[in-house]
Image 1 (cartoon, one colour):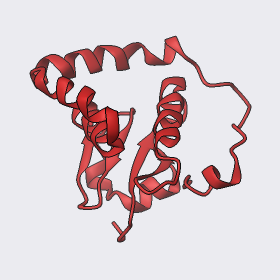
Image 2 (tube, helix red, strand yellow):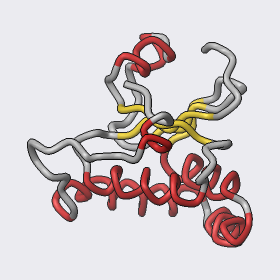
Image 3 (cartoon, one colour):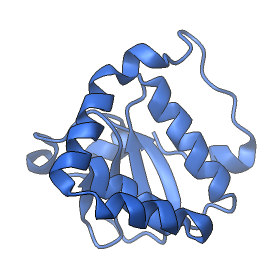
Amino acid sequence: MTAQMTERIYYDGDCGICHWAVGFVAKRDPEGRTFRFAPLGGDTFRSSIEERRRTDLPDSMIVHTVDDRLLMRTPGLIYILNRLGRGWRLPAALLWLVPRPLRDFGYDLFARYRKRWLRPPTGVCPVLPPKLRARFDV
């Protein structure tokens, strides 16, 4: 991965919940100092993550840290909340207290049905303000 000042969140472009989560993070990181965003399977994803590392990744959100770690499922969620700082560190700490097998089971159960609960608009690209658009890679 090339050196970067911010970390990247890869998201499922076909998932309404993932789109919502990206908006949630972007709103709480308004200056874009912490995270950039790119869709899973896009050019940025393919050029930043070697093929051997891509083979077993889930199709939900993945955090690519500046130290080249790939965090997914609840470790990724906890990491994002911690990096958002302020009041988000408490929910991250509470989630961390739940044993990982239990919290990952809940995450996987949620992920299994997420595309049914909130679907992205079809055939419409979201219109982003220029400041936010600059934080998205293809």
